[in-house]
Length: 257
Ligand SMILES: *[C@@H]1O[C@H](CO)[C@@H](O)[C@H](O)[C@H]1NC(C)=O
Ligand SMILES: [Mg+2]
Figure 1: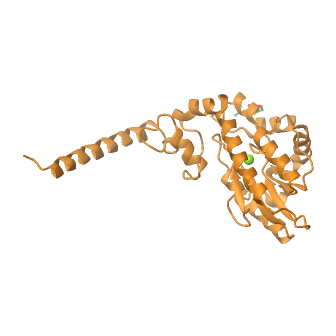
Figure 2: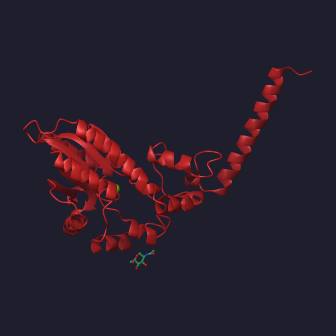
Figure 3: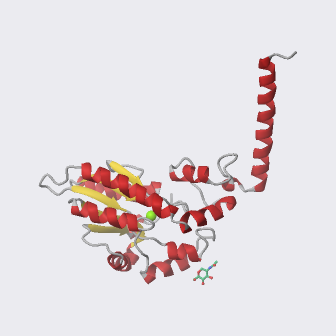
């Protein structure tokens, strides 16, 4: 009679073989970047976890099996619920900061796209990031100036302003879109920012992480303490001159390096 240990070994061997062969099938079914992270991740929750916490690193498009998941995530309000949850934690932190001490040098940074403003009308019309990125049509959308606020971030913005933080809006949009961006922000309910910082000619070709770190470092040099930073991309958050606390709002549609 085989020992319990050998039965267990056999079981593990069979399990390992099964796992390997189904992974192989998965690799054959999808191009490399389309592999959903885990076996049994039929609901794409594990994929979403991995992209949101940056375990996935660079990714180029929504995996084919997760397109419907992203559509549902956004359409059923779970996207908004996740951003509200991020907002709640942001506010808990903001209220804990002793703002000002008379100097008014406590800063909070906000990103624009998918953070202060939502380009969801554009992405809904183009398949939630499933169609190849078209810079022409995207810029046409930006130039309409019709992007609505992401409601949760709008409330964070209003609160941190009320609490006395100096607000800096730091976006990878080019300076050529400066006027329309400012107007769109005002129309969406934002006001009273200290400075709107866009990508200048000298910033062309820089990765967002580098560009944004440089701009944050300038603020630090001017004497600001960057207390909070809100963005939908890890490139809004990583690098140097990072905020005391950074808050990631959800974005399962695209990744900006
Ligand atoms: C990109 O968008 C522009 C403007 O809407 C359109 O004319 C063009 O055909 C699009 N390009 C592709 C490859 O779809
Ligand atoms: Mg953004």
